[in-house]
Amino acid sequence: MSEPSEASRVYLRFKDVFGDPYARRSPGKKRHRDPQGSSVPFGLGRDPRGLGDTLASLTQQLGWNSSLSQSELLENWTELAGEETAKHSRPAGIDEGILTVHCESTAWATQLRLMRVEIMTHIATRYPDAGIESIRFQGPNAPSWKKGPRSIPGRGPRDTYG
Image (cartoon, rainbow, N blue to C red; front, side):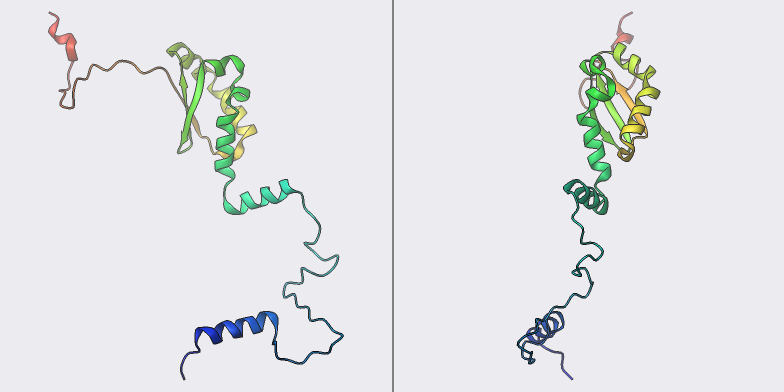
């Protein structure tokens, strides 16, 4: 027996969903079919829901909670770290659960390292879905003595002074 054509498969599927269009119906009755029962008045799932609840449910289903929480954390760094601290530091990004924060001086990087536990506590309570496991505080970049792509490891320019 040969396989039915695509048109016949579509017709049979529509017939299952919408009913047979050629079947006789009594003129006074409307055909209404709901396989899940969600169109029953006062049934489950019929109550209106708020937009916030709907979006929260959608982000949970799609697995976006972590990404949204991380971006919210980066956006609200001033509230999280404090006004004065935020003037001298900025979050650079989050990679594999490590929040990287750039500081304007090594003194500020050291001060924030001392405040690491307090900042991590604030992050854990306000942004639990962010998945932050650690914080890396970096000072400004130091100058490099490396010259060119074929540099030789060693003491560097200091070994020529004497």
